[in-house]
Length: 151
Image (tube, rainbow, N blue to C red; front, side):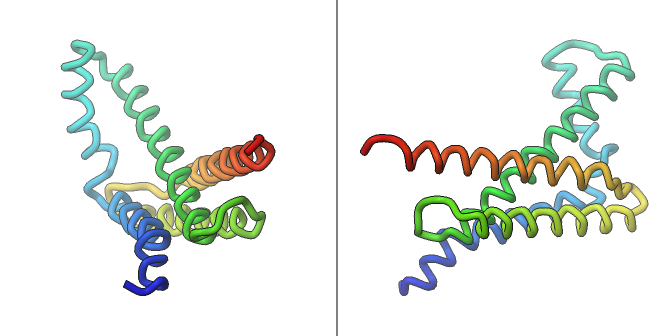
């Protein structure tokens, strides 16, 4: 396997696959109604019977936490793709990761606005972008800490 293929498979493919998974998550199959069919039985198995209002609140929190985690992961993967086999941190790598993540978030919410079972929510774009920013801040901090540690 040549080095370009290896670099693509190791660094770029995970970011591309995660981006594609987000497109799948954007479909009707992952609407609130659909995810509640999985989450409610699990929570009731775990916690016992739940009033609808409590379940709705937990469901909301789970879905928003998923936004943070999914888009933080996306941002980290695009940073890793751009950095490739090199080490360290560069602002241009972080900015590219943030830009790609924000564009994916915008496209995701635009797509959801077109579906009858979903809603496009600009607040979710903000939440997704915040998750991406958190990931980049963590990467920068880790890289800075690593560069200042004794060898």
